[in-house]
Each structure stands twice: as structure tokens, then as C-alpha cells.
Image (spheres, rainbow, N blue to C red):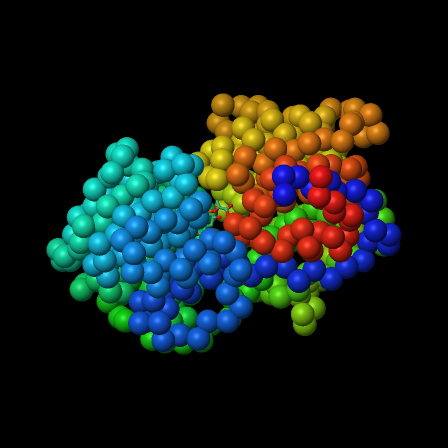
Length: 414
Ligand SMILES: O=C(O)C1=C[C@@H](OP(=O)(O)O)[C@@H](O)[C@H](O)C1
Ligand SMILES: C=C(OP(=O)(O)O)C(=O)O
């Protein structure tokens, strides 16, 4: 399928959305399960390609582990194969080989890993040549590039002879993902102390104990439904999102607070969360340091509602599945909007050019091999027909996205 055309919101806008399970929770649970010798009972694991790839590679006896475009799978498996002394070649898509990994490799080397770069220094592909713990039990690591390096080190730390103390230097981005890792580790019996004033994390050499674990629905995937509700031109719109909890390990549950001023009220029920409409506010400023995966959803939604949005904390978007800042800049223009850097200290604004929607032709959105570009722009269909190219990209995190979308709009292959 090369494109889908989305149009004609169903009236009234009323639907129950099954959602996908969280790939972030799934991939952590799978690594920890592997470190217990596969003795845990994991339920509701994600159907996301990133998680299915993790499952496949954990079981594979092949020497090359191709993670495709899955960042967590690359970073977590690099640490896992290292600590379990498996000699592997770690590789992925062309884009994965442009996503930095040197900070994690340096940290693993400082613990006794023998790792070589097969192509460019600091980037996959990597060759893992073996591991002999050298007794080092403390390291410092930058916290402002990717939290996935920190999560990867934390999860293997209970297996190190003296545990591990991690000192995070500089600003810490995506901290809720580090906290998710720690909470899941504790669930499986790890002993982790945190001192967030000193940005120090201490893991004792206490082995994991096998437990059961049920993965929650994915809050990042839920964000697209918040945008659908915000853009619905129907004050009675009601969406029920299944399997989400008010007390979540996922930092992207911040979408509840972000979307209130954009016109969406959340009510938690026994089965998930109910979205209803409320009046929107004319401006919003949000720091996405803790929830970078929400930035695209909120930028497109604000652009379509004519809300002036100021975004900070989006620097890490440049090293994700694509340069998401550049991709947003190019594609928002097709909606008569723009994303501009207003100050050099990474402060951006989304501005909607006051072009009436009716005068837009049907925008054709390019997706840059990025699932979140496809899903962030899809809710535009609540107000104006839209074509999304390469819709298959959603498989990375939310393979059933278009089936769920067909519950609220007409989805046609074109
Ligand atoms: O640990 C995780 O599960 C993730 C951490 C975040 O990455 P960064 O830490 O690189 O920002 C996020 O963008 C990614 O989708 C998933
Ligand atoms: C950035 C993402 O994933 P990863 O870094 O795990 O590839 C994402 O899912 O938006």
C-alpha cells in the first residue's frame, strides 16, 4: 500500500479504541525476562514491530542481530548481549546506522566490554566481541542525548559483580523513561536507589526474580486519539481508549495535561479513559524534554486548531526515526502552517497561516520512515481530507492504527 486517503468523519464521533500495547514497557519486560532465564509470565506484549523484533532476536542463535529501525531494541540488546557474553554483530536500517550509540559503547567498555565499530566510530553496526567484568562499579554518562543508554545500563546492572552507580551528567532528557525502567526493575526484585537531586542512580548486585507482568496500553499511541478528539468538529464527540491507567509508568500520559488546554477532558474508567470535549485556549507553551514522542502529535493538532504553540525541549527529535523537526517543518507547510525556531535556545513556535481550510487542496503527507509522522497527521482528517504516504510505517509501534482509525473516518487505499 503506498498511500491512504482519510476523509468523512463519522457522525456523531463516538468510538471505542482498542489501542496498542506499550513497546517501551514490553521491551524492558522482555530484557528482564531474558535475564531471569525466560522464567517470567509476560502478558499483553506489544504487537509493535520493535517488540516483535526484540522477541525474535532474544531467541535467535544467528550471529547478526538486525534490529531494523528499533532504537530501544538496538540499545537494550547491545547491553544484554554484552553482559551475557554473546558475540554478536548489531546492525539495523540505514537510519539506525546514523543514530548515535557511542555513549553507550563507551560506558560498556568501561565495565569490561570488547566492542568494535564496523563502519563509523560512534554508530552501528557494532561487533560485540565479549565481556569480562573488570570490577568497575561506577560510571558517568551524559543524560541529554538518549535515555535509552541509561535504561540499557540500568537493566544489566544487577548482573555486575558489584552492581553499578550511574552518575548522569548535564541535562537529563526523557527522564520518565528512566523511571519506567527503574520501576519495572523493582517489580522484578532489583534494588535501585535514586538521588535525582544529584542525578545519581545506584543498582545493587541483587538478581532479578521471575514475576508475572502485564503491559499497559501505549500512551504515545493514545496521543493520536486525543488529537482526533481535539479536532472533532462535534461538541458531543466521545472516545473511549481501552487499557490505560491513571497511574501509569509511561511519561507520555502527560498527554492528559497537554490536551486539556487544547480542548480534551479525560475521565478514567474501569476499562481505560473517556475523552470528551471542552473549550480550548488560544495559546499553549510546553516543554517536551520528558515526552519527546508527543511533540509531533501536539504540533499538528495545535496547527489545525489555530492555537499558538510554543515548544521547548525538542532537540532530541533530530536523532529519532528521522529528523522530526525538519520533517514537521516540511509537512506542516502543506497544512498552511509553519514550525519556526524563534530563539536560538531551541524555542520553537507553531503558527497557523490564516488560510481558510477549504482553500487547501488535499494535502499529501510524506512520512520519512517515521511512524509518528503518519499518526500525528492522520487526525487532520477530522477537519479536512488528507492523504498519508507509506502508511505501513505505523507497524513500528501501532500496527492496527489504520483499523482503529477506520472507526472514526473513512480510510481508503489510494
Ligand atoms: O526508552 C524508551 O522506551 C524510549 C525512550 C525515548 O527515547 P530517548 O531517550 O532517546 O529520547 C523515546 O523517544 C522512545 O520512543 C522510547
Ligand atoms: C523514538 C522512537 O523509538 P526508538 O527510539 O525506540 O526507535 C519512537 O517510537 O518514537
